[in-house]
Image (cartoon, rainbow, N blue to C red; front, top):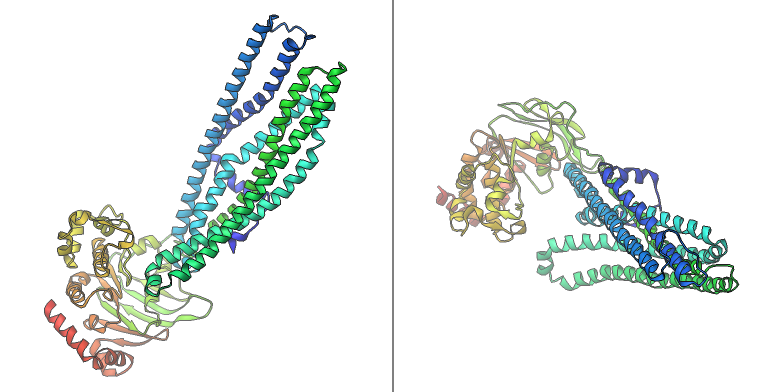
Length: 610
């Protein structure tokens, strides 16, 4: 799985791309670096002030300092005031650095998430056939959050830790080389513990990423299909499968907790061990008047400050490695080529009287497993053409190719004599009103679902579209009318009501071409015939394509295309195709001759609608 990518600790190519998202905010980053430098310098001042207070006022042999008072109480007060000012400076610089970098991280991640969303919206439909939704959600959530950790508390703070360590070592060497060497003698042990910790946590983090991606994919799939789960009583099996995935996530986190549990105590033990060495050796040298007491006290404070950045660097290393792995997956998604793109100089959509022509079209979703084989036909402007055939014959694929959800491998599709590949897909799709077999509604009001963000669609046009598809009577029964809220995926409505809203949506956008893909299969018989009665208004002045299994809905079409095993096998009017006694005649017999009751119901419903 892509989530199982370990990632290098540092990849210059990926880091340069990541830094590109911070470039617009380089002014804020420069200010953050100034705060960081000030913070690192102030970290060194505290122990130096302590040394000065001890050597000047607390040790009997202390030497006078011309900048401070000779009076012990006044001198201590002055040093305390300076120390307080240093603490205030540390607070201000640390707060400023953290606040600025956290805000920069959020801005950079906002830009990255937006770029990911825009890129995915440009991908053709086939891309989403191959990539699970849960995995794509992980890219925009978990992976981006990891990069936010890198920007907000990774790169700059790594520099801050290194600066702090450098300043501390420099000051300690100036005060006592011997004590500095004594403190650093435990450093190899600290480094060894850090390496073991890094390896352990890196493996655990990788397992956590894999588990999170699996959880997202599993939840998306099973929550969406909850009706099927309950229908087939599969809840127990689903819970068991989720428990296993969830358990993997828990065990990975427990291993991480274990690693943190032993690492920090080990480092602290080694730190205090070095302080014990300093106290013993420093006390010996103070007793022999070879070192001042203030130096020993300062070294004890520096020891506490020295090992803390080392602990932080270990954590930042893991953040850096996780960020490299996340960025690799994110940039792999961003680098995925958009297969259906607008040409550099797109041809305009023909103004009027545009026919649709399939010219020896071949298409396959995978390799040469052809879904369409050498399909050719023409739909003249204003015609209503029906497409029928068995399941899997390629009917819906024809629609997807017209709308450029996919591009054909051979042949051409032309609208008004212009190849659809030479058109801008956005402008092309704007000419079509499409009603699919499975209606999809978004959270919001009924009016918002009909308008679908198109500001040019007025309230009057929405109401007129609802009237044409016999939806207006249902709308008037709702407390809020067109402003009635709709739950996610329209769960508060029946399937037929959702389909009628989809009809109104298609009409409200005033399309030149109308496509109905099994659009009446989800409504009851009476509603179907009411919609069928409105079809005369819907197709008037438009080139219309109707895909249907119910042959009763397409008998009055100008032309009927019969698809069979990826090929166009028959073409003609209803009566012409019946006279041929071919595939269409067999379909008609299956639906009507052997189902007289259904035929009678259709006739009764048609009479009712009339």
